[in-house]
Image (tube, rainbow, N blue to C red):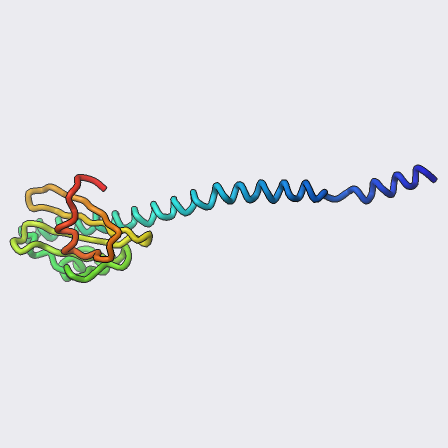
Length: 159
């Protein structure tokens, strides 16, 4: 009769204990605490790169228009749409809302071109192309993400 009781009690011990379940939940919590911020940081960086790429495309399209016409003053929303139809080109005082809307502007003398695009992470990226051939970059978290802002805020040689 004693061996039967031992056999029955070993059948009941086939599951997990509360401590084992709590350890597994703790390990999963630690992995989530490490993984989620890393994922969100990677997502933010990807969104920023997308906006930076948009203004670089604007720079390339403006150079194409400049090469064809010989004047940065000829860079308009219609000429940019004809050159690069994949974006929504906004006038100089219209603010970009995402990386597919690029606000463009030229200065009065037609010697500089500026473009601005808003990242989904909330940072506006600027690029300014000078007729002399130099390119300046800038970024800010302000709500004014316009081509006019690009002409005044893009001042460094890199982002």
